[in-house]
Length: 245
Ligand code: HEM
Image (tube, rainbow, N blue to C red; front, side, top):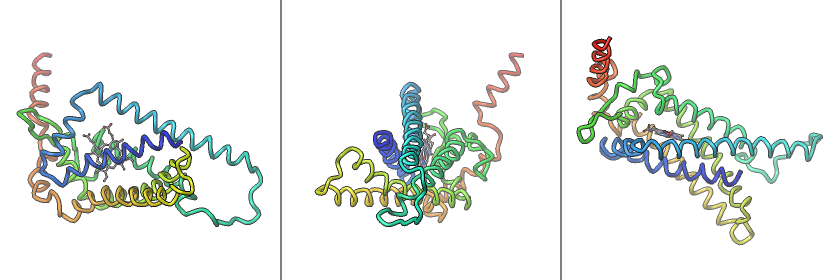
């Protein structure tokens, strides 16, 4: 549980650093997104590794909770929450909501399912990088986070991610045997600090875009692409396909 959780924690930090580039000019995050996808072997190795870690994390959560139940088959006569925090008692619930969020998030920004974003077909949003037509990830974000219910879901998911990490990071150090009486308070402090920083970092993105602090002019400029015909390269393919028949 600790090792898979640690790997997912590192992903969450890396992904946040990448996403914070939305506060820079549009080319910055578009160049980064294009770079991530430019080597399919690396991209798919990372995706499979991530999937494996998610699978291991869920499998160990299920095994641990079954072992817990077996250790005490009879329920307690009186339930007392002393000695445990809200975060620790709701790890399963927060984990399930985060998993649901990730499924939605993949449909939103990776698979680009038009029905889930409340805006339109994101696959039509293209921009040019060094003369090459690439997906306009900046446009997807600045248009996608104008929708109030999308922003609300992202903020709720980030709040639960904060809850999950503030207990999970400390528990990870404990499982790895690094939370003794000397390091215990420091580990606790680090877990709180890092989970608050992650919450602020992620939540600031939809919040800043929704409040029109980031990307307002750009969103106005590219909005028409959503209702326009497919990009020229796709049109050329369709025409070429028809001619071939
Ligand atoms: C405000 C918060 C977030 C924003 C703005 C955001 C943004 C994005 C974007 C734009 C992509 C697509 C990148 C591309 O196709 O080029 C993406 C992919 C992804 N995000 Fe997030 N993300 C956020 C939070 C999270 C969180 C909290 C998690 C995990 C707990 C997460 C997990 C993923 C995963 C697994 C992918 C797929 C990567 C891939 O294989 O292509 N994201 N995110």
